[in-house]
Amino acid sequence: MTSHVQWTGASDREADLALDEVVAGLRAARFEWRERQRRAREPGGRELPSPDALQQIVQGLLGALFPMRLGPHELRQDSEDFFVGHTLGTQLNALRAQIALELRYTARQSGEPAPDPEADAALLTRQFALALPQIRRLLDRDVEAAFEGDPAAHSVDEVLLCYPGIHAMIHHRLAHELYLLGVPILARLVAELAHTRTGIDIHPGAQIGPGLFIDHGTGVVIGETAVIGERVRIYQAVTLGARSFPVDGTGQLKKGLARHPVVEDGVVIYAGATVLGRITIGRGSTIGGNVWLTRSVPPGSNITQASLQHSAPSEA
Image (cartoon, rainbow, N blue to C red; front, side, top):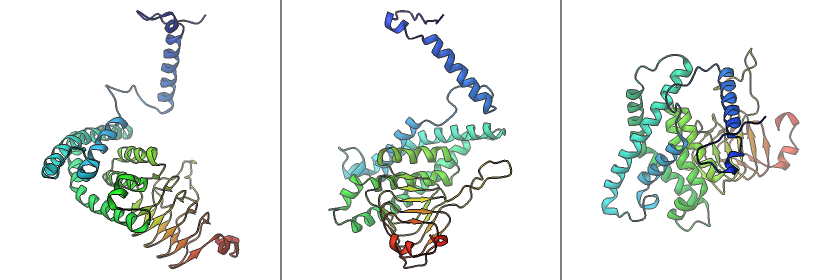
């Protein structure tokens, strides 16, 4: 017989939901998962960083980076510094708490206790904060590249406020710094905020030089070990991906190998192109739309579907 929860004050409709059965089933599923993952009973409260907290932190950082464009609408220039200082104080303290959560989680996963996660989190937060002026300068180059590369752009302000590629790059510059500081979960959470909103998926590990212009952007994928030089232009639905995934002796994927393309300065990659593996796209090259490319090309190349059809299969 199906058991039904009789919550105090529950209506007949609520009582028909068999909530006690569902709660018991979910409890069993959790225990099975923890058993497979060899996890002990999880202590205390939440043990992982919070996506909701990161969303609020990043929103505050956007305002601190671009106060008169992405800050509050009532802000005036004579109070910019006050706003930036107050916002950074609030959001960086919140970030420190999230970093401490990840450090504790990582220590538990490794089985080695963290020496002092609060002190380590404070140090990492300080390093992140000191990187913000350089991140702002890199983003200025990205905004200028988009304005100069798109005849439809009427101003740099329009680019900053409206272009999904710039929104993705703001998040990536922040996420990449967190990745370099050794908090990859936080980095991925920040990257996914932009991915969800724009459809542009940039792994926080990707190394991207100044002046990247992602035009339109939907469906762009840039992998973890991709390296992109200066003044590169990428259109929608481009993939900079891995060609293969080596495994170790136990059949597990090898982590951390360089498996994504190197794109040198001044390259243009048109819509729908797929570039796979640790290959190099030489400086100033153009990769045409819908090209499938798995070999390196020298500087100044012009690769189209027609040119690949005349190449040997092993070179395509």
